[in-house]
Image (cartoon, rainbow, N blue to C red; front, side, top):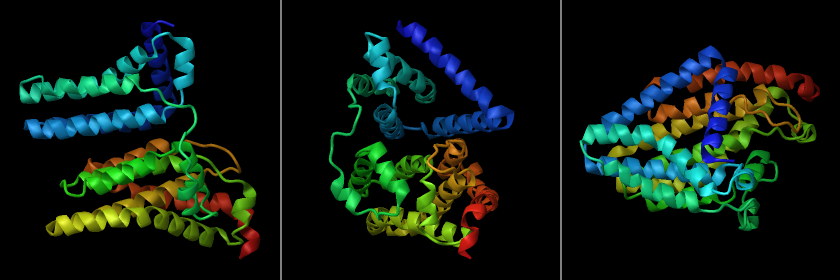
Length: 316
């Protein structure tokens, strides 16, 4: 398949996804994209800011490259997988490159094309090649989400944690790395555990949700706490940033759990909550979305109770 034809397929897929979202969510996604680009444009006031933005965007593209599931398919349908990747990632980066060049009045941000080209050349194994038995032992046997998520994402979460620790001396960089950890963790809640695992708790729906949320908060904050404490050590005057991020993280983890159980079916994958979860996470950069997690928690808590009560009604 020629690269141009492949891009036409991607275009058709994009329009199909937009159509499936419906008018309301499509409008919300469009508005969020506009606000993100506006925020980016406003941040391009110096070469230093442009450099930081370039590193963040490169990291996002690297995450996409290593987490995507179609590497094998692309290698089968085209002789130039590198070119397919490069064109796709350049398409993603183009709005940011143009806005930065306009704001700065020079093409500095175009340097991002070099690391993007390097990422495009990287081959990704179809299965993780690193043994994660040690990290798996640190995760509770009942934590289905993290067990399955760690197998699915390989060492990505560990890399992000190491980056967060290394970047604690850079203002806000470690917080952004933790935000990327939350973004990865949000994908852990796509898959529903078997019915037997839910019943094994022997709790009613209210207590079950409470235990699940607390266990997921513990799983995130145990690795995040050293990063946050180091951030506080290096920037004690910004203690309020740490507190706000902890509240932000707790609310979003609550969103992930309740979005999962609002539509939970035994051993089924359901990604219907992914877009709303992503919009809740954008609240860190776009304050317009900060109240959204509370509204989603209230709505999906009721839906989760309604969904789980028929299964757990015998455990009052």
